[in-house]
Structure formats: structure tokens, C-alpha cells
Image 1 (cartoon, rainbow, N blue to C red):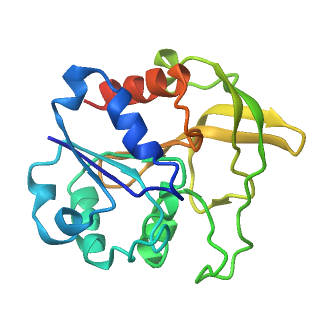
Image 2 (tube, rainbow, N blue to C red):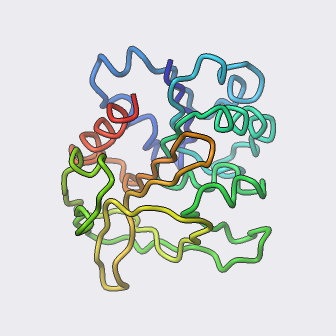
Length: 216
């Protein structure tokens, strides 16, 4: 089973919109929860989870920080589990030091425990392309796409080695849009950063589907 936990992300609901746009055969394998941490924190979902998808930032959007989910996510990852981190989900458990180091490419909150300068996101049109020379096998399944406007995350902290698969170039520079981090426990974290917009573009869905199918 695939578990997909999302918040409303400032009433844009990108996690819900992405879930609803997925093909029926994938949705049939997904347990989706928006603004509801009860399963994440209190049920043993990690025992049956074949893939974890997050589209959430802890302690935002009127939702409490999912403290009870930290140990379950850590156990899942230490058992070799793979995780897809959509948009700002590198900050899903930003209060946890283990998580901050693990994610590799991190959206930094304004009140960061490590005192790192906060990340920012200009809202601009962008074209997301495959990074030249990338060797990860997932890259051959990804496709370039353009968005009329989106949050482009900049000033991310790189807390450990990661492989950039997709990037975008805007006035401020060139920034990662898809990256892979090895957990050290046999699994990988797949960052896919585009997708704040309330209109979920086909290029976002097709690439998320490609990542899910690659992992499974």
C-alpha cells in the first residue's frame, strides 16, 4: 500500500489535487489523507507501506506539528523504505534533527533550530528541464515541462549529498526541481519541488507518476 499524507498548503490543496489527478490504477493503491495526522501518528502504517508520499510542512496551515509521526517515519526509512517528498515536504518534520540531516535538500523554516538562513520562493513562470549529464536511471523516465507560474524554491540547505535530476533557471539563478538522496538504509528520498499552483499541470502529474512507477 502507498500512504500519501498532505496538508492543505495554505488552501492551495496541491496534495489533494495531485492525488485526484493520478491514474485510477495508482489511486487504487493509495491511502490518502489531507489535514489528518491520526493515521500518521497513531497507526502502524509503516508495517504495510511500500511507498510513502508527503506533501506537507510541519506546524503550518493550521495543523499541529505531527510529533507522533516522527518515530514511525524514522522506523519506515530505517527499514529501507522509499519516500517521495513533494514541494515543501523536506520540512515535514523540520523540528527533528535526524530528519533535517537526512533529507539532503531542505526547505528551511524562518525559525530553524539550526539557525540556517530561511529559504525563499519567488513566484514566477518557469521551465523545468533534465539536468545535463545526469546519470541516475530515473532521469530517462522524466520529461521537461513549463509552468505559467509557480513557487520556485531557492536558498535550500544541502544537508548531505544529493543527485540533481531536474532544474530550472530563473532571474535569481539555476535551482534544483527534482533530486534523489540515498538514505543510508537501502532506500532513497525523491524530491519533486514544483506544484504549489492550484492548477496541477500535466507535466507535474506525468513526472510524479514516473517517480512512483520507478520506485515500485
